[in-house]
Length: 110
Length: 114
Image 1 (cartoon, rainbow over the protein chains, first blue to last red):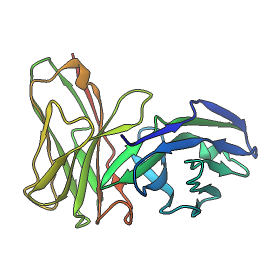
Image 2 (image 1 turned 30 degrees about the horizontal axis):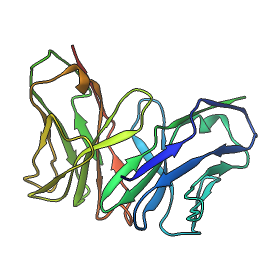
Image 3 (image 1 turned 90 degrees about the horizontal axis):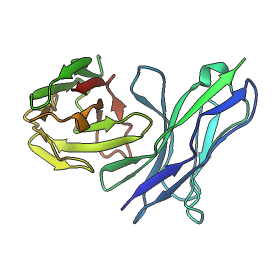
Image 4 (image 1 turned 135 degrees about the vertical axis):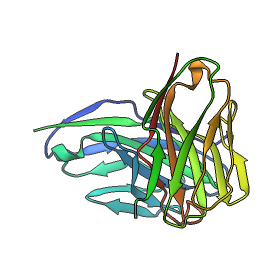
C-alpha cells in the first residue's frame, strides 16, 4: 500500500543553519505530496505542497521538490530560526486518502 | 469563522465504556476526516467523508464508527473502548479533494483508556 518514510528525529540545529529533512514515498499512480508542521499543543498546518513531478512547493523560506525518479520530497530551508522549532510531517494523498510519515522533531537553538 | 472545532479536549475512559468525539466545521467543506496520532507516530486515517450521507473507511477503522448527517458535523463514535485506543484524535476538513484544497485541522482530543 501507499506509505511515507521520513528521517527520524530529533534534529537539533543552531539558528541560521541549513535544514534538510528527508522524505521518501511509495504510491501507486500520481500522488500529491505535502509537508505539514505541528506546533506544540496544536493541530497540523499545511506548510507546502506539490501536485506533480518536478513541481517545487515553497512557503516561509521552506521548499521541497517532487522527485518522481527518486520518489522523494525532501524539505529544505536555508537559514532556520528558533520559531521554526516544531514537528514536521511529510504526507501524500492518493484517491482521497492521506498517508503521513511519523514526523521529525526540529529543535532550533539560539 | 471558528474553523474546525473538536470537543472534548481531554477525556479519560474506562475499558469497555463508549463515547462520541464531536467535530464541527463552519467553512462549508465537503470533505471531512478523522485521524489518530499515537505518541511519536504520524497520523493514521480512521474514517473520511466526501459529503453528507457518505462515509468510507481509512487505514485503521476497527473499533470506531462515524456518521455524516449534515455538512457541518462528523462525529466519531468509540464503542467498547480499549487501551489500544489511547491516542490523540484529530478531525480535519477540506472544501473538496485534498489534492487541490488545503486540509484544515482541529486542535485535537486527547483520549486515555485505562
